[in-house]
Image 1 (tube, rainbow, N blue to C red):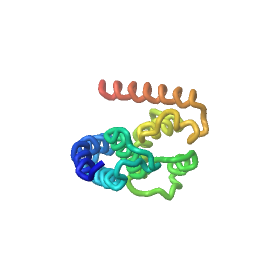
Image 2: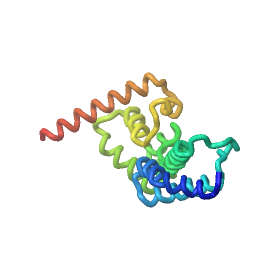
Image 3: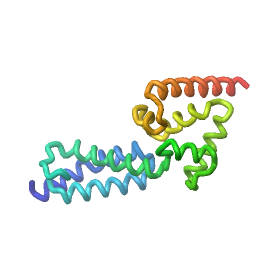
Image 4: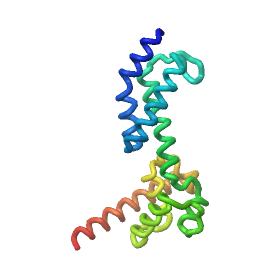
Length: 168
């Protein structure tokens, strides 16, 4: 394709890529940064994927690249627990992880202390940090069935607590 076509494709898809990034990150500056990074990479590739294959659907390719980069950034920013030991360290207060994530975990732990068991809290925390239910079992070394059971229980307890607090 000619260089004009690449610039046209970038202009046509800029908004789509930005919206994809913003939908994941919910932060305008981060979404803009990822959009620029994706579009620069796309321009450099000139019709070939990272594997060297021709890009058949540029719009889809851009959305997939944007989604991947935005999710990676979101995961880095969340600094969520990545394994059982991290969760245990954070819950015990012995983790070296400080900063925003630590404060979020402590707030969540305090807010749910009288509502959820430790295991329910761990599963629910990972879920709200963006982990898929299928990703949680290996992190906590429990079965998929148990993760689902804990999520249902945690949601019910939180809902019941919320309804009770609204009646007070």
